[in-house]
Amino acid sequence: MPDEKLARAIRARTRRDILQMLCQKKKISVHEIAKELNITESSASKHLKLLYDLGFVNFENKPPEKLYSLKIKEIRELFRVYDKIIKKLREV
Image (cartoon, rainbow, N blue to C red; front, side, top):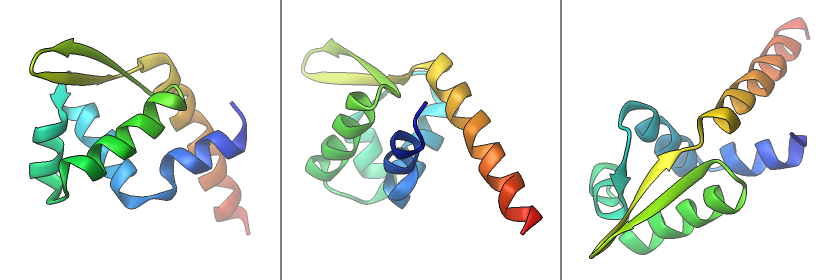
């Protein structure tokens, strides 16, 4: 996984919070994310779209909303790379 992809995924605090929420729940709606993080649904949707485009989340249509979930394999890779970065920072 390229470092740029990881950096984009975790750069914004809101995206890190969304990933954390998705780790705790199997599926969650934009409405639930927005309510929990005290952001607009539009903002939550934009962050989720970026995470989807980067390959970290899936969604399924359950009208009237979409339910988002983590792509487990990609998240494991994300944490593996993140751990490497943290270890390097501790060496400095």
